[in-house]
Image 1 (cartoon, rainbow, N blue to C red):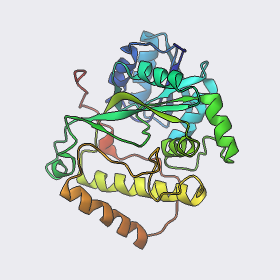
Image 2: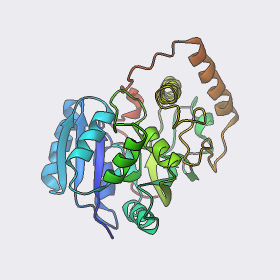
Image 3: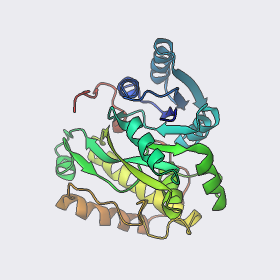
Length: 293
């Protein structure tokens, strides 16, 4: 199998970074290097990242301007391997994530992007949010869209593909870098799903949930305006051109929330300035992931 590296853009994730790195170090196919890129992180996150790099020699610390796109560029620039697995500092990869995505790319040599098509969402404790996530928590569910929590690229091939569409990866003025990667791969039929999953931690307050939904919608509107030829199906980054569909069906509350978010966006300004600042509740400082399934 080909060598690969892991890239982890990190911003204020001292509560989850250690378990994220642990999941990378427990891969059945170990990466050659792990690149942790601090992009505007606080002191606690920086100290933890430095401690991890001293403890594990495969970890390389990088630094960039605030924003995930800046971190993406820094990691792709510094990686010694052409194949890079990207994950988030608050995600936990399944042990076979790297091997499954490498295998998917090897069995489909024409593809340059692969991603886990399954997710395992951790429990939600806020009573207002439980109805929104009741069909998702504590179970594995399938998704069709590419997520920043677990996807792999062949760097040189992807950059060449983006160039054909006059896209200079990665633009630093966009909100959804992973959605842009997915759109480029989707249009050119260069994406292949891998049968693996990542554990993700949902927002923990109703206010942050609304902010997250607003940010997601705003991000897609921004990409549609900037790259209309790539985003021909409104509000989706699905690799097959369809909207995301989960095996665990949406709750009634969630089906009502989504149109409300769209309505608020239509009333408000469509200004699409970069919005990289995450909600506080997505960066827990005391809640740790369990490492069991």
